[in-house]
Length: 478
Image (cartoon, rainbow, N blue to C red; front, side, top):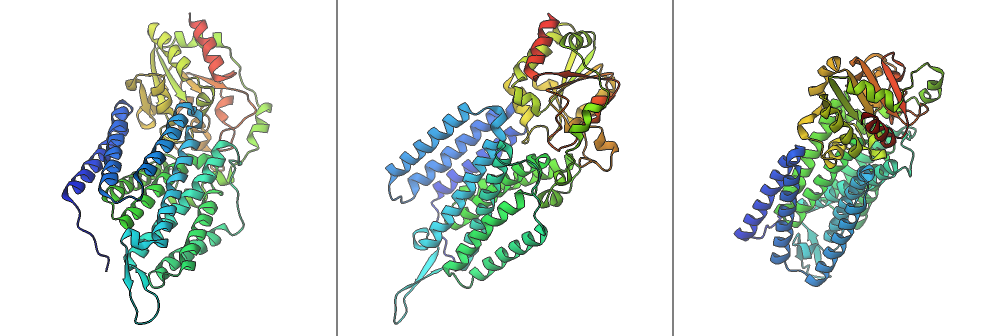
C-alpha cells in the first residue's frame, strides 16, 4: 500500500496558488495582448512552487542546489537573449528534450534509492539482507514517467536536428516502421505491467532503452511540413512525464503543472491537425510530409511567370484600399518583421487599410508569426487568424505574401495528388493582385511542393531577400 505522508496545509495552499497562477498564465498566453501578463504569472507560480519545495523538504545540500539554479538560470537567460527568432522552434524542441531527460533522471534516482523518496517498504526476512520493496503503484508511476520522459528526450533531439538543419527535414522511412513501432510500444507497456510484479533492474532499464528508441523511431518518419504539430506534441509529452514524476515524488505542484502542459499541448496539437485537415494519429504515425514531391522546384523555371520590382509593388499598394499581408517563415529568416511594420505604417498614412493574415501552421512552431509581429509592435487588432480573414481576400486590392509558401498554395484545394491536399489555406489568389516576395523561383516550400500561385495571371513575383525587398518598397513609398 502506498502510504501518503500528511501534507502541511500551508504547503498545500502554496501549491494551489501556484497552480492557479499556471492556469491564469495559460489563459494569458491565449492572446498576444495578454501574453506578457501570462508569462509573468507563470514565472511567479513557478517561483512559488520551487521556493515552497526548497523550504519544506529535507535537502542534501541547499548551497549545491542554489549553485545549480544559478548556473541553469544563467544559461537560460543568455540563451534566450541571444537566440534569433528563426531559431526559436529548435530551441523549444531542445528545451523539451531537457524536460524529458529530467523525468528520466528523477525516475532513475527513485528506482535506485526508493527509500529517499518514501516509495518503498523495507522487509526484514528471518535470514538474509533486508529487501526494499517499491510500492506497486509507484512502480507504475515510475515506469510511465521514465517511458514518457525518454520518448520526449529522443523525439525532441530528432526534432531539433531536423529544424536546425543538422538532419534532413525529409521523412526517413524505415521498412516495416509501423510494425516495429507497434511492437516496441507493446513491449514497453508489457514490461511496465510486469514491473509491478518484479522490480528487477533489467525490467526498468529495458523500458528506458526501448523508450529512447521509440522516440527516435516515431519522429524520423515525420516530414518538415508536420514539424509544428511535432513540437506541440512533444510539449504535451514533457507535461505528462512531469505529471507522472509528480505522483512518484508526491508533489502536487508537479502534478498540476504537468497535467496543464500535457493537456494544453495535446489540445493544441489536435487544433493544428484540424487546421491542416489531417488525422492526429496519421501525423504522429508518419505525417503528410512523407510523400512530398520535391520535383516541383526544378520544373518551376519552365513555366511562365511575371516579375515585378519594389517600385511596382509600392505603386500598386499605395493605390489600394485594402492590403492584406501574409507573413511566413521566409519573413522570419530575413528578420523582416520590423521593416514590414514600417511599410504598413506608411501605407496607413496614405489612407490604405492594412491587415495581417496568419495561418495556424505558418512558420515552424505554433504562434511563430504572432510572436514575430508582436516583437515588431504590430497592433494586435490588425492581426487575424485564417478563419477570420479568409473571406476578405476577395475584396482585397493587394495580397502581400512575404515568405509564406505552403499555406498559400491553391493546390491544397484542387490537386488530390498533392501531399498538402485538404489542408485549409489562405485564399490569397482571390485578391485582385498578389505580390509574392521570394528569394528565387528555384525553391519549394517546407512540404516539398511547388506553389501554383506563382504562375497565376494576377501574381507578381518580387524576387529578393525579404528584408531588402521591403526596405526598397519603403523607400519607394516615400
